[in-house]
Length: 244
Length: 244
DNA sequence: GTATCCAACGTTGTATACAAAAGAGGTAAC
DNA sequence: GTTACCTCTTTTGTATACAACGTTGGATAC
Image (cartoon, rainbow over all chains, first blue to last red; front, side, top):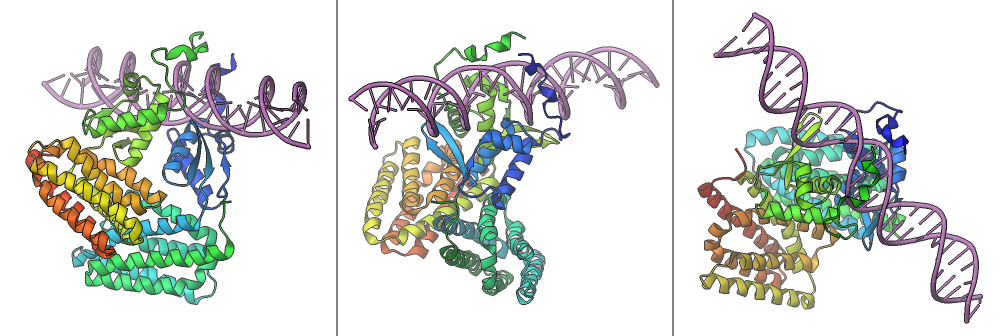
């Protein structure tokens, strides 16, 4: 009855910047989910996470809502209550997700291929550099998954960033990390087929450099579609995670 | 110091269902924005809305975050503070938005065209009925905008609903109402060209009924692209709303 | 008359208190 | 032994309290 008179002294552990809790909570939770620290299928309890991250429930709650909206977390709606769990990774979901990204990036590729050639040149140079980077990693047998992922991500991000408006950019930014979950959880097994993806990238580069919008769009779509198939095979071998 | 001992008696006005405040606030706010009750460009004050709708700030806040994520509301980020305003309607935004929807529905149309013909038949029947409905309204000079909007919406929704997975469905459900804002604010002027849209719909139906996925996808994309152009002309005449 | 500083206010962000609903587990009845 | 009911616990949803920050307006000094 007296205790609640001084709520301000409640989080003495660390000095935290004001106005950043929600954002920070969101990012940390997303990272935990993407990296599998919070395994697919896990039940989520707001208070636990709040305690674990050192926030109160309010920003956690906001972060969870956003994570739900972006597909990292799903609500098991039991009437008016909604318990949440980390979204499972399934073959069907991967397939759909990759299709969507393929079409969104397809739109971006189309726009990029339509840019004036002066602007296109810079983009193409960057794309080529990323793709040669990938090729080198593919030859060297070290297979640093993080580095490969980063290059691949940069490749796609470059295409989108070159021409997309704010909406498409935002949409891509929210959808892409969800593909990252699949990447990271099944990465090891994907790396073998890196060569195929590199070849597909080549085609995309060539289409953009010719200014062929149709081919560029198609190329991206094919890249993602094949990616989904490669993933499918891996999932068949290793089994799905977080769904039962 | 004593007052806060009985917060529960604070909303005596109406008996409200538990666990629905956030959802209800979101829907009502979205409706207000889509219908223009909250004009584009308006500054948003949480406490005002809370008072107006009879909730506390908590669910309003959640609803606003979601509205922001979905593009109805934008944050004017001033350092760590973020004041919000109702997203303005601009020509560029309309263009990008319509492109995105075109591509998402394009994916759906492609999938729908690939369904086994038994399932397709039902879908086609519904599409035809909606489109004849539109044609009738176009002939009759009454131009009930709501009715037209509803039929057009149903047409597109049918295509998506016939084949899309949960992710695509969800994405469509969140993106589509944003197009509705443009529709409603500029409706009167769009109705003249209804005939063109109907013709485009015809092509889409025929493509789906032939099972021609490419043509179906293209048809939808063209429909939205032309829609954006029709809208552009209207905006040129009437001026943008909420941007200065 | 203008520019600068200070104070009061408005608005947001976070923490906490409390209530309702769902779920688990045990006990009693058949 | 099984089922049904009741209670206790867990967890979510909402309201409110409070603090920090930005902004605005006025007052004062030049």
